[in-house]
Image (tube, rainbow, N blue to C red):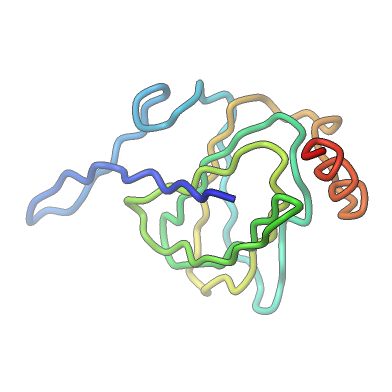
Length: 135
């Protein structure tokens, strides 16, 4: 599995920093939905799903959290802690987020609107579909 980080151009001076997010420029898809997670309690894991077609970019605006990404063949764990870096999560990738810092604010941009039918919430169902797609 190839992990793709998107380096976001940071502008700033002694007053502070600014990062601009633009669809089809530094975000590789049309942005249809934006949401963010914050106030996640210690020891809580989130995610536990994959998307059939949805693509996402996750950015830790503040603090940090860890991701477990799984394509059905390989699992990769990584730390997201840079507000000038986005993590591209393609479709059919199982994701779990954990080890949230107390101050973590995780922003997620998606290429489509919320659609419950796009979610795969059973890991067994995900692995069955991922193996079928590989074969």
